[in-house]
Length: 173
Image (tube, rainbow, N blue to C red; front, side, top):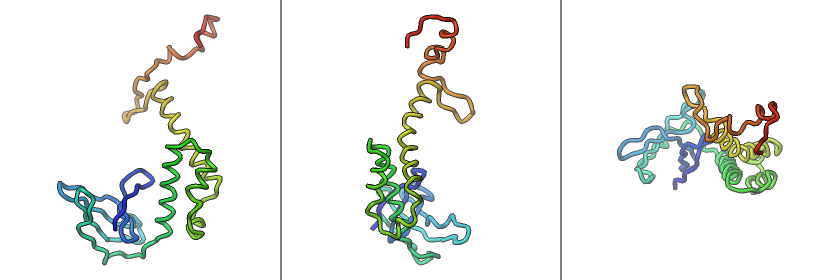
């Protein structure tokens, strides 16, 4: 049975029979997936899966896997996915999020994790990212691909009080 997840960069990931596949190509009626280990320079796995647009598995070419399935890696991935979801959508403290996301993992999977301090820092990063995005959009302006910032919602002259303070003028904040 196929289940779907996301990669660390929020790309779709297909998990089928203990192997994970990343999206390779999309055509009008099919989605082609390739084994996640195809990017590894040592393995270069050539296994493929084809699904229709409703994500129903049509064709599986498991005979060409050059590695074994890694259930521990998939278990750790699900723990990270739960951590990311909880960090973004809840206001729990980082220690509780880490404990709830990784507490039920097997001991082999927990051995693959970094220290609890690093996991808490990851949660804090997700909590902080929403605020940083808001601040950048509102007061600084989002950086475009051409290196120039977009206009912010509030111009610097409106919210910056430095010049008014230097001139001993009245301030609104």
